[in-house]
Image (cartoon, rainbow over all chains, first blue to last red; front, side, top):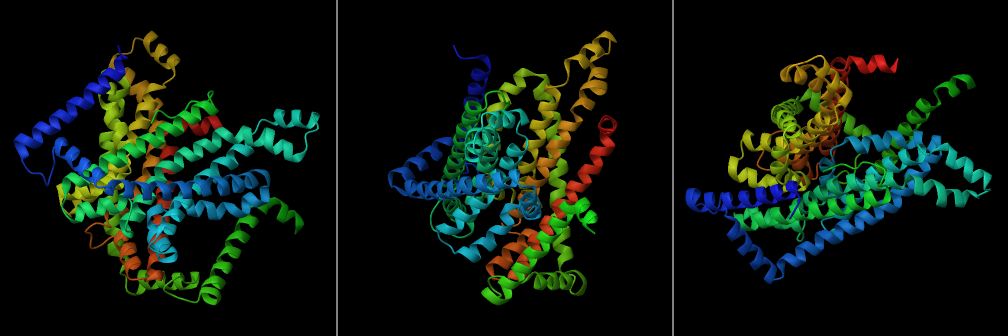
Length: 253
Length: 259
């Protein structure tokens, strides 16, 4: 038997879907406004079997992965330097703060002007969003390291390199993962917006295509897919966070 | 002189960094790129903002439209998020039934709902407020929930020993104790709400900062684009400052603890 809260959650989802189906079929009878779940599933099947879905999905995932990977490398390096050297922190701070406080999506048109309509502009959007989060969190992690650990490394006569590799970076790891988690959600939003504004592939493009052709079942397929993507990436990162830093209480959502 | 430098070195470094950055930006824009449909100098952005603020005054309607959408969406999400969060914290049944829907809605990129909401509510103010609402409500809800969940047990026990009624327990203990959490939810919601405003104004809007940015992007009008982005950043900073003031007023005991 499942746990009580899981059972209730499952029940709630099933009841919600049923209610949606009944309401859409009996009361509204308007596919345009609210398509019933069954026609959403049918539309999903149609899109999947023609290979369209695959193409758009792959484009979004690829853009996301490239941007994310680059942001991890650059973000950890810059964050490390900011945590280690006070002057560097002070020089970077105003710019990072500016980048952080500007709503991401307002700079998307600018990024498209600069980097074109292709894949590169979307990778840059993901990169920008994730890098800022990782930089801030890595710097915080490096700064708040327990001084006792550094003393231990001194008494063991570890070289600078070893101190970095064996003490500082592992100590900052939970912070870094937190930065990644924060980055994922925002980056997903960013990549979808960039695709929506200007592109010819990706889930954002599919979203615009569906809404401009008034194809509501297709629109809902995209919404459900995006929801699934959000949930899966969030769960993965959360699992990672718990594994790397089991002593830290992670966010429930 | 040296002493003065040592005392204020962080501020001086930051100032220097901003100056150098702006100088590099200026040189990059005027000498290296030299294409005004690509990048313009910060001076040109300043000139354009001056013009839009004091000469043609065309920025004000956009500012007003964006702020009012933001304001309504934000207020609505406080009105809905805080009570629902409390309800979830106090009743496990409500929590279990609402939880899966909330996780789904919260982790889905909000932009996905924008076309759907537009379809349902039309291109008027309703859909825009709804998009902002959707962005703001979850951080507020989740933080209210947490705030009420993690209230110190000793406070509750103290209330019991004073034989407070349930209502008094809520008003005197649970609510004040969760205020700091709600405020940090409001802070999170601020940034998400501004993003929501921009998203909302991309779809079928005729005014607002988001529209301004979107339109400038489409017509390669880079100076106006920068003005719009700057206005958004300033609105965000203004909002944070207001919230900080609210926090000082709403949680006076925090300041006492610090000093």
